[in-house]
Image 1 (cartoon, rainbow, N blue to C red):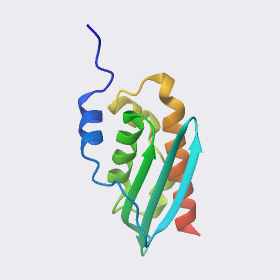
Image 2 (image 1 turned 180 degrees about the vertical axis):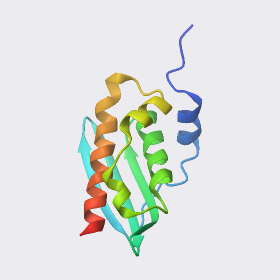
Image 3 (image 1 turned 90 degrees about the vertical axis):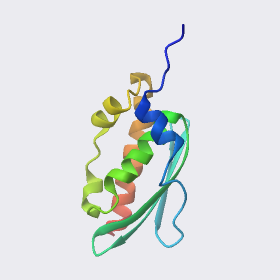
Image 4 (image 1 turned 60 degrees about the horizontal axis):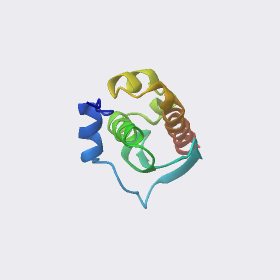
Length: 119
């Protein structure tokens, strides 16, 4: 018997990513590394993230983590993008340690988006 590599939160976030897509009226960034690509777009109003969207080319863990991050940050302050809870995400989604680099690509993308929105 083979153990399922994806826990329930991964399956739920992967199956119904509410933030998938692109905002045409926002700031967009693309980060490619570790064999994956993360595109994030966001619109900010008065220092608050009014909307966030993503497109990811990667594994279900990375797609789920990006959906989680968009949901986590959306409606919060732009400044919150400076802090990325990588360990918390990895634990919640049961991301294998060999995929740590992919989660760090997401961290780079989140922080790059924050810098773009702040400038």
